[in-house]
Length: 210
Image (cartoon, rainbow, N blue to C red; front, side, top):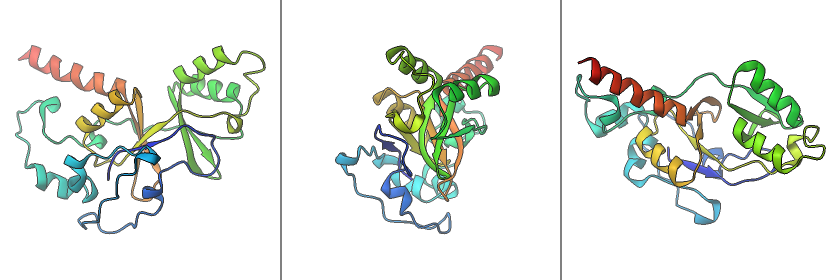
Protein backbone atom coordinates (compact mmCIF):
# COMPACT_ATOMS: atom_id res chain seq x y z
CA UNK A 1 0.00 0.00 0.00
CA UNK A 2 1.04 3.62 -0.37
CA UNK A 3 1.96 6.01 2.36
CA UNK A 4 -1.01 8.21 3.24
CA UNK A 5 -1.20 11.51 5.07
CA UNK A 6 -4.36 12.23 7.06
CA UNK A 7 -4.92 15.95 7.38
CA UNK A 8 -5.30 17.66 10.79
CA UNK A 9 -8.82 17.39 12.16
CA UNK A 10 -11.04 16.59 15.10
CA UNK A 11 -11.23 12.91 16.11
CA UNK A 12 -14.73 12.22 14.82
CA UNK A 13 -15.32 8.87 13.11
CA UNK A 14 -12.35 7.44 11.25
CA UNK A 15 -9.60 9.66 9.93
CA UNK A 16 -8.05 6.94 7.81
CA UNK A 17 -7.93 7.98 4.12
CA UNK A 18 -10.77 6.94 1.81
CA UNK A 19 -8.37 4.72 -0.11
CA UNK A 20 -7.85 2.60 2.99
CA UNK A 21 -11.47 2.47 4.06
CA UNK A 22 -12.57 1.19 0.65
CA UNK A 23 -9.67 -1.18 0.13
CA UNK A 24 -10.71 -4.74 -0.65
CA UNK A 25 -8.89 -7.35 1.41
CA UNK A 26 -7.64 -10.21 -0.75
CA UNK A 27 -4.72 -12.55 -1.13
CA UNK A 28 -1.41 -10.89 -0.27
CA UNK A 29 -0.01 -11.97 -3.63
CA UNK A 30 -2.87 -10.36 -5.50
CA UNK A 31 -2.17 -7.26 -7.57
CA UNK A 32 -4.56 -4.37 -7.10
CA UNK A 33 -5.04 -1.13 -8.98
CA UNK A 34 -3.25 1.75 -7.32
CA UNK A 35 -5.28 4.60 -5.92
CA UNK A 36 -5.09 7.88 -7.88
CA UNK A 37 -3.16 10.72 -6.32
CA UNK A 38 -5.52 13.35 -4.93
CA UNK A 39 -3.57 16.41 -3.72
CA UNK A 40 -6.72 17.77 -2.15
CA UNK A 41 -6.73 14.92 0.34
CA UNK A 42 -3.07 15.33 1.18
CA UNK A 43 -2.14 11.81 0.08
CA UNK A 44 1.55 11.16 -0.44
CA UNK A 45 2.01 8.10 -2.60
CA UNK A 46 5.30 6.39 -3.28
CA UNK A 47 5.20 5.61 -7.00
CA UNK A 48 8.52 3.79 -6.97
CA UNK A 49 7.34 1.33 -4.36
CA UNK A 50 3.64 1.25 -5.24
CA UNK A 51 3.60 -2.15 -6.92
CA UNK A 52 5.65 -3.85 -4.24
CA UNK A 53 3.72 -2.38 -1.33
CA UNK A 54 0.28 -3.22 -2.68
CA UNK A 55 1.24 -6.77 -3.54
CA UNK A 56 2.31 -7.74 -0.05
CA UNK A 57 5.64 -8.53 1.46
CA UNK A 58 6.30 -11.68 -0.57
CA UNK A 59 5.71 -9.93 -3.89
CA UNK A 60 7.81 -7.00 -2.67
CA UNK A 61 10.74 -9.29 -1.93
CA UNK A 62 10.48 -10.69 -5.44
CA UNK A 63 10.38 -7.18 -6.89
CA UNK A 64 13.48 -5.94 -5.09
CA UNK A 65 15.40 -9.21 -5.09
CA UNK A 66 16.93 -11.21 -2.28
CA UNK A 67 19.05 -9.23 0.15
CA UNK A 68 22.64 -10.28 0.57
CA UNK A 69 23.19 -11.95 3.92
CA UNK A 70 26.05 -9.67 4.91
CA UNK A 71 24.50 -6.40 3.81
CA UNK A 72 23.85 -3.70 6.39
CA UNK A 73 20.17 -3.20 7.21
CA UNK A 74 20.24 0.53 6.53
CA UNK A 75 21.66 -0.07 3.02
CA UNK A 76 19.10 -2.59 1.83
CA UNK A 77 17.04 -1.68 -1.20
CA UNK A 78 13.88 -2.93 0.48
CA UNK A 79 13.34 -2.82 4.22
CA UNK A 80 9.74 -3.46 5.35
CA UNK A 81 8.36 -1.23 8.06
CA UNK A 82 7.45 -4.38 10.01
CA UNK A 83 11.18 -5.00 10.56
CA UNK A 84 11.72 -1.80 12.54
CA UNK A 85 8.33 -0.71 13.93
CA UNK A 86 7.39 -0.87 17.60
CA UNK A 87 4.49 -3.32 17.99
CA UNK A 88 3.36 -2.00 21.38
CA UNK A 89 0.43 0.36 20.91
CA UNK A 90 -1.69 2.21 23.43
CA UNK A 91 -5.03 3.75 22.54
CA UNK A 92 -7.40 6.19 24.15
CA UNK A 93 -10.97 7.20 23.37
CA UNK A 94 -11.54 10.61 21.80
CA UNK A 95 -13.81 11.40 24.75
CA UNK A 96 -10.81 11.31 27.11
CA UNK A 97 -9.24 14.51 28.37
CA UNK A 98 -5.77 15.84 27.67
CA UNK A 99 -4.88 15.08 31.28
CA UNK A 100 -5.92 11.45 30.83
CA UNK A 101 -3.87 11.21 27.65
CA UNK A 102 -0.74 12.51 29.35
CA UNK A 103 -1.30 10.25 32.36
CA UNK A 104 -1.70 7.22 30.11
CA UNK A 105 1.54 8.05 28.31
CA UNK A 106 3.37 8.50 31.60
CA UNK A 107 2.07 5.27 33.15
CA UNK A 108 2.65 3.19 30.02
CA UNK A 109 5.95 4.80 29.16
CA UNK A 110 4.61 5.60 25.70
CA UNK A 111 5.44 8.57 23.50
CA UNK A 112 2.46 8.12 21.16
CA UNK A 113 -1.22 7.27 21.54
CA UNK A 114 -3.78 6.11 19.00
CA UNK A 115 -6.97 8.12 19.46
CA UNK A 116 -10.12 6.12 18.69
CA UNK A 117 -13.72 7.11 17.99
CA UNK A 118 -16.23 4.24 18.14
CA UNK A 119 -13.33 1.76 17.77
CA UNK A 120 -12.14 3.53 14.60
CA UNK A 121 -8.74 5.15 14.23
CA UNK A 122 -9.32 8.86 14.71
CA UNK A 123 -5.80 10.13 15.19
CA UNK A 124 -2.25 9.66 16.37
CA UNK A 125 -0.79 12.05 18.94
CA UNK A 126 2.68 12.30 20.40
CA UNK A 127 3.71 13.47 23.85
CA UNK A 128 5.70 16.36 22.40
CA UNK A 129 2.67 17.59 20.44
CA UNK A 130 0.42 17.35 23.51
CA UNK A 131 2.85 19.32 25.67
CA UNK A 132 3.15 21.99 22.99
CA UNK A 133 -0.65 22.18 22.75
CA UNK A 134 -0.87 22.54 26.53
CA UNK A 135 1.61 25.38 26.48
CA UNK A 136 -0.40 27.17 23.81
CA UNK A 137 -3.80 26.62 25.48
CA UNK A 138 -3.04 27.00 29.16
CA UNK A 139 -6.49 27.92 30.47
CA UNK A 140 -8.40 24.74 31.41
CA UNK A 141 -6.32 22.86 28.84
CA UNK A 142 -5.88 19.70 30.91
CA UNK A 143 -9.64 19.20 31.24
CA UNK A 144 -10.27 19.69 27.53
CA UNK A 145 -11.63 16.62 25.75
CA UNK A 146 -9.65 15.35 22.77
CA UNK A 147 -12.81 15.28 20.65
CA UNK A 148 -12.89 19.09 20.70
CA UNK A 149 -9.26 19.44 19.63
CA UNK A 150 -7.92 19.53 16.10
CA UNK A 151 -5.43 16.69 16.20
CA UNK A 152 -2.29 16.82 14.06
CA UNK A 153 -1.77 15.20 10.68
CA UNK A 154 -0.44 11.65 10.73
CA UNK A 155 1.04 9.15 8.33
CA UNK A 156 -0.46 5.71 7.71
CA UNK A 157 1.50 2.81 6.27
CA UNK A 158 1.25 -0.96 5.93
CA UNK A 159 3.75 -3.46 7.39
CA UNK A 160 5.06 -3.99 3.83
CA UNK A 161 5.79 -0.31 3.17
CA UNK A 162 9.44 0.41 2.45
CA UNK A 163 11.02 1.99 5.52
CA UNK A 164 13.43 4.10 3.48
CA UNK A 165 10.61 5.73 1.55
CA UNK A 166 8.71 6.32 4.79
CA UNK A 167 11.74 8.04 6.31
CA UNK A 168 11.88 10.48 3.40
CA UNK A 169 8.19 11.33 3.75
CA UNK A 170 8.43 11.71 7.54
CA UNK A 171 11.16 14.29 6.96
CA UNK A 172 9.20 15.98 4.18
CA UNK A 173 6.08 16.35 6.34
CA UNK A 174 8.07 17.03 9.54
CA UNK A 175 6.38 14.16 11.35
CA UNK A 176 8.29 11.94 13.76
CA UNK A 177 5.91 8.98 13.70
CA UNK A 178 3.70 6.89 11.41
CA UNK A 179 0.87 4.50 12.23
CA UNK A 180 1.16 0.96 10.87
CA UNK A 181 -2.16 -0.70 9.96
CA UNK A 182 -2.85 -4.24 8.75
CA UNK A 183 -5.05 -5.41 5.87
CA UNK A 184 -8.14 -4.94 8.07
CA UNK A 185 -7.13 -1.33 8.81
CA UNK A 186 -6.38 -2.22 12.42
CA UNK A 187 -3.38 -0.49 14.04
CA UNK A 188 -0.56 -2.97 14.63
CA UNK A 189 2.38 -0.73 15.44
CA UNK A 190 4.01 2.65 15.22
CA UNK A 191 7.23 3.75 13.54
CA UNK A 192 9.05 6.66 15.14
CA UNK A 193 12.27 8.55 14.57
CA UNK A 194 13.64 6.59 17.54
CA UNK A 195 13.19 3.34 15.61
CA UNK A 196 15.32 4.76 12.80
CA UNK A 197 17.97 5.93 15.26
CA UNK A 198 18.01 2.44 16.78
CA UNK A 199 18.41 0.91 13.32
CA UNK A 200 21.38 3.06 12.37
CA UNK A 201 22.99 2.83 15.80
CA UNK A 202 22.80 -0.95 15.58
CA UNK A 203 24.29 -0.95 12.09
CA UNK A 204 27.15 1.36 13.13
CA UNK A 205 27.83 -0.79 16.18
CA UNK A 206 28.11 -3.92 14.07
CA UNK A 207 30.47 -2.17 11.67
CA UNK A 208 32.63 -0.94 14.56
CA UNK A 209 32.92 -4.39 16.10
CA UNK A 210 34.10 -5.79 12.77
